[in-house]
Length: 167
Length: 235
Image 1 (cartoon, each protein chain N blue to C red):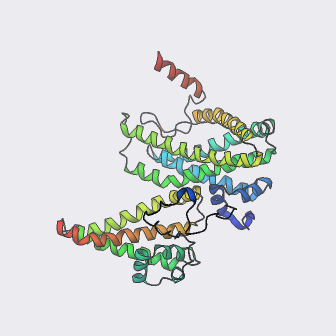
Image 2 (cartoon, rainbow over the protein chains, first blue to last red; image 1 turned 45 degrees about the horizontal axis):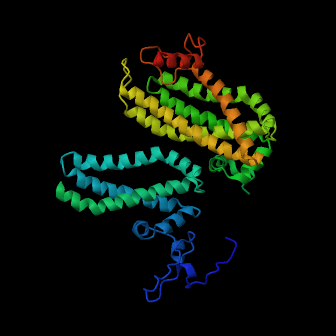
Image 3 (spheres, rainbow over the protein chains, first blue to last red; image 1 turned 120 degrees about the horizontal axis):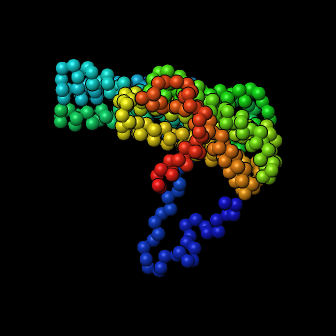
């Protein structure tokens, strides 16, 4: 859009003006979309597993921004660590349903299933993101997949008590 | 600078996948042997891996054969039609040299190679989970065949969409780009389907021995077989 908005903010154009006596118009909500890293809190580095869990739950944009910075290996390792630990815990809960060797087999199978499926799909995910016009590098896509696994397994931990009750 | 191909290395492939106009326009106007080697590598490795995944259902030896045959078909189709495509482009109104035409087609096959290569782990997993091939053709056989067709068709459509965009930019005219694309596709279909017919099998038949080329490979042709099938269907 090259031309300036002819209607000043807060004023209605004649054809859309509310009738006299009617309710006042709802407040105009400014667009919230901004570039990654515009917010100061997104630029704060993430260190440690606990901070990574908090970031993936509360500030996913911060995780995305940090993955785009040079040397995202530490963050990716943290996210993968969260995914492994969380899925192991959930696997133990699931394993209690059958007991015996499922106590150790179920967690291992859940971790292996999650990571193998992620690795199988990673190349096509990257190619699809490129075809869609994304500028993300392979390492960033890998980090996002690690973040997805971390978020998914952390949520599974949240469901673990419910699953345990039904086991 | 994105246009400097030597600095980009393998990331050129992601630029081609995204269809970024500026670097691609620059690359297409400059012949660079290193870049051509990269394109050929992506095509051979990508289609080879996918071919190996498809052939692995019949036999490991069939996997090796298909890994050779699939890239061979692509390269032979490209080279066999290279001269014709290079001549058709200016004839149909596109101001492009023989090298530029060849590079444009190579780029589209790079997209095919990258997509098929990225699908090869998924296809390997599919084959690994499928029951062994039996003498009686079951629903699994048709499912694998259909999955193969869908993946290859998707790769082909994606590559041609990008090629159409590139031709539109090069010619600056939608009609010219459509004419050139249709002419190139027709030529590639004619030669590619016949090369595919000669170099079959890909998945392999459970009742026939594993071989690189069938003894009757040069008997008949693809279009004769299609005509015969249609005749059988409607008679």
